[in-house]
Length: 320
Image (cartoon, rainbow, N blue to C red; front, side, top):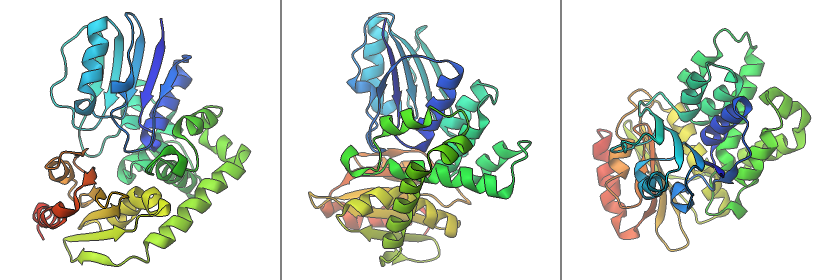
């Protein structure tokens, strides 16, 4: 019997798995990748009675791998908050899927474990830019404002680390970062004991954010704004967290950050207004490589000749 842990390489996926494996240790094969690499279960070819845990990747995008696993008799535990579509009916599948805009996988695992490792749930939730939800998790933990800010920053930095065109562009491979963090049941202990790696993430984040903030808006008004970043590694790394920062700074506005790809097309990150977290998934799913959730979604390969159409649909989606 083999075990597989299949998880998104962003803060939410990593922190969800940290909580689960602290509570239920398992020597599993790690299957992960860059943030945008979400068809991860489709890579797994299990045998009967293998156990597969899937965290923070869309069931709809992994249907082929899920059906294959169930057909051979593997046991699957699937936890996610992205668009799922129809969920297969099988006694071998245990699923916890909630597509509500204020929920992420770290929150679902926190509930499943009755708050056993809530600090890491807070980190993952901040990383997914669910500030209100993260602050609700902080209640009764008696942390100072400085401690709460540290958890928020760590979540942002872990999330930032997941973005890039390849693992080689990241500061740490997601499986490497997971293993590093898994040595610490408290995120505060990681920061104290691993200050060099924490600072590597922190410095990289601030350098890339500063570069992004110098870009000029493609469109910008009270309801919607879109920015284009160049075909550079720093731009690919920062695209998601820059989208989050824009959303936080302008909560009534929808945002799109488009990053030029080597093939001339665009990688797109979309954020619905924080004060009305709907519309991002429907917008992005109009395009073949698009997907996500109501509050935050993306397109992996927007053809350059579809840019004008995308911008038109983007403005319509958010009332501009």
